[in-house]
Figure 1 (cartoon, rainbow, N blue to C red):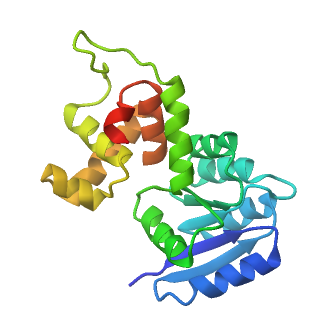
Figure 2: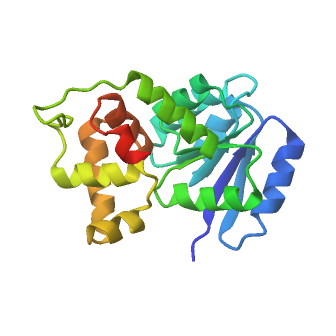
Amino acid sequence: MDKIRVMLVDDHVLVREGTRELLERENDLDVVAEAGDGEEAVQQANAHDPDVILMDVALPKLNGLEATKQIKAQKPEVAVLMLTAYDDDEYILAFLEVGASGYLLKDASTEDLIRAIRTVHAGDSVLHPAVTRKVIDHFRRVAKGLEDEKGKPIVTQLTDRELQVLEWAARGQTNREIAGVLCISPRTVQVHMGNICGKLGVGSRTEAVLYAVREGWLSLEDIC
């Protein structure tokens, strides 16, 4: 079994050492690189081709947001998982908008972190419960999209099946769970998600969900 290649980005050496020790206890995880600042993170991502990057927000030289933006522009297939103490709305939304696959706070348990790494590597997204609440509250305030005569959001870009997949993704369901609900294969769900991202011009399911909520295509009452 191929191991998940992980890169750690944090300006505190002790944090990186401790995280490496925890992750390498797992048979399917391999820490292939570390970086102590944003510029080094971009360089190391290009040099080592990690599958998942654990990224902090506050970094020297180049902050975590700009580093994530540059890495995703060069390597859109890399899953960036934020692991930080910052839970400010502007940080959360900004990172999700540039393509981060998840956002965890540093009070998360080791089990939650390991599960999150495996989840984002599988193509799903992860949000800390406190972060999920902030995202939903934000879009409850700003989402206004167009509605038809029955009060349903108008969606012209996505098929009915694609919208169903996106709705279940917004509820935090994995590809396998969505497949079970819709009676299709996980591979078919993956294809639908790829088509959705392509049509919307986004790089991850998290961005797709944010796009749809912002445009009013998804009802927050339905996905909460």
